[in-house]
Length: 122
Image (cartoon, rainbow, N blue to C red; front, side):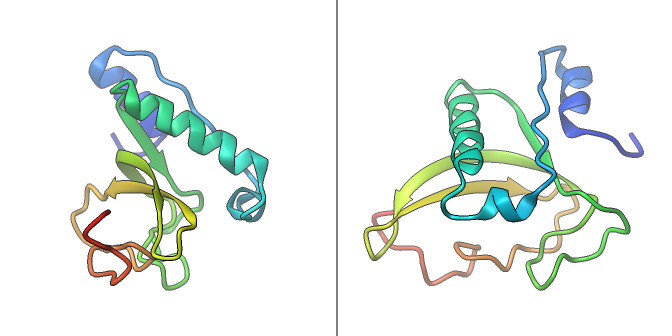
């Protein structure tokens, strides 16, 4: 497969139904008070709890790093799991565990593999 949507690829590989959730306004999606972000995360959690295969990806093209995040533009990822946790301050956090099929370009976002935000309780 040269490119496309990960949901379509998972459908062709497994024969299971798939759905795509697109959000064109990432600033709104990532805003802490966004109801659309909460709705999307609730869908992801429900699908994860049901054992669905979940793919995700970034928009754009050129396969360059977005900012200094370790996330690549125009790239597909596998969503391994989703979690709601309490951080060290007791605030709710929404986390997804992603796998980069390239096996390189680690996330530099909060809660990455080398983050000091992890606690024994998490």
